[in-house]
Image (cartoon, rainbow, N blue to C red; front, side):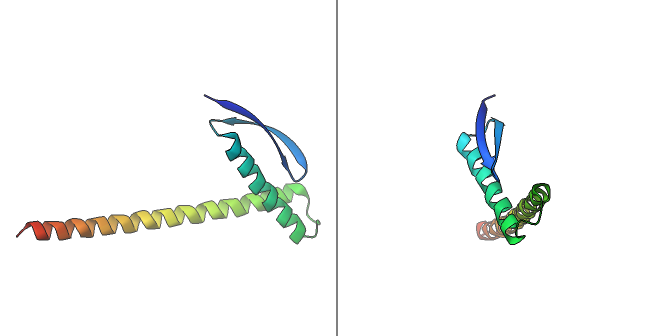
Length: 97
């Protein structure tokens, strides 16, 4: 198991992370996404919300995005399955001649 030590900054707080099996660039990108999300929330809230609540709000945004992607993925798999079944039926029909 490869462990990468990575130092990142999120909302001007430095973190030293240990990433199992992830490339450093992946960890940097993930941290940058969290940093942008939290800073956007802070800006929209005019810095009136403490960082813990900002982190929770950012986590909710990411969770919502993940759930939507999961829903979209399941919908696509369902449609692919339906199309595959239809193709199989058409092929069976054509092979009956």
